[in-house]
Image (cartoon, rainbow, N blue to C red; front, side, top):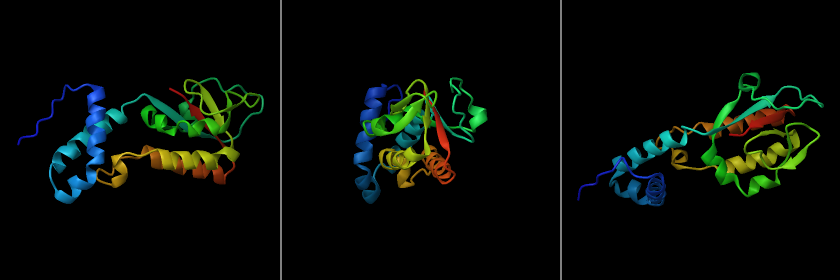
Length: 172
């Protein structure tokens, strides 16, 4: 039986087939059947996953108490990009994260999806746990060894936590 992949499939059906492939991963790897097709699907999904839209995370060296962080300044904070569709997996846990929206006089919970969030050092342990436990895809099986945003974000969170610094999040 030949296996053909129609490259014009819709996003919905693509996600369905990709999720099915993930569930069949143990069978595929142990039986060795259609491994090439699985890797090809994984490659396509990686391209879609990492193509955006993005959130951006960076470390604030010194937080100014009265400043309104309203501008997108990726170079100033040396941000890393993180795919929006992976952040979807963080809900509802992320709504318990204590943060500030745009300035320290606006305490809130969760991430400003389309705005700027200041994440204080005392919330970084919770953020680390959410990112670590709720961000997953085939890349963690090391088949493609291509998923770097999670690793980079976890490293950034640890660095900011060690240095007692805020993380700035720019929504999509």
